[in-house]
Length: 352
Image (cartoon, rainbow, N blue to C red; front, top):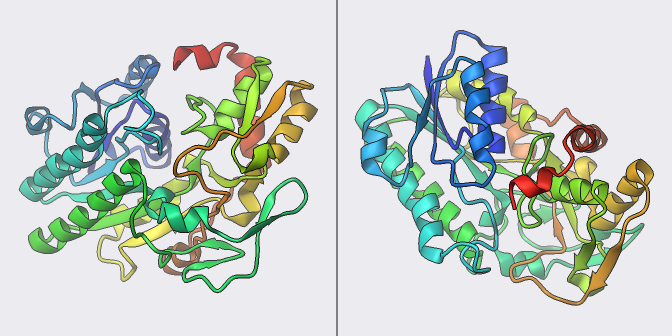
């Protein structure tokens, strides 16, 4: 079986490629990446060391996609993953849509031509930003906890697949939701298998930390390097909560989805660390203090657009359909990142 992994030089793409190759050496994996992310040029030698053919190309370019050999499956890990993309001046809205939507269209035409299945790594940010920002929360033990509520698609265990996906989402969220819709339509119209995995915050060693993307990695590396940090929004308390998912935990699900394309399961599932793997920035700071000693963290009343006090994924549908659960606990994830930070000082400068 042949598999194409897009965005293979990124954290998710490379992690998935390495783990899939370890689990099933008989898989023929190829990868493509345009290396647009700063620091990603360090990854191709690691990819080649795995014996995986690597194509320096851009999924926004149809001719680059046309040059790829035929495969049985595409695992789409290529994206601009920032919820602030197109808004903060670091990338344009046009670039965001080309990366996350035009790239999807090119991949779908490739899948149509080769009858290849596609698996999209989507995001929790397809859920309504206005609904998320209005979640009823209360502070408890240095974090926000969700109050009892009768909102559709959410409980104390997390956000389910039926939570609203109505606008506004963010330009990033809108691009991923549009990609989801196109993938479902192409799969139905042209008869190839599709799966969509809405991921929580991916985290682990070797992730390039940015505050609006790999928050756990960014925070730990910044603490280690004694860089000043800020609790932004929510009265500067640091109570905002996210769950963490190690990409290694995706491998059992991806393996089943590849080998069981006709399994009677929902096409869209949440895959996140869940409530047990959730933590606030304040709690993360305390963890870092115990590991690295004190560091300056100041409170800021600045507000970020599209921010939310509490995003935790409820993966019950994936559990019931695929017998899938995250197995790597948050403390193990944090320790892995911290150990990597000890071994790689100034890691943040690589991707600034």
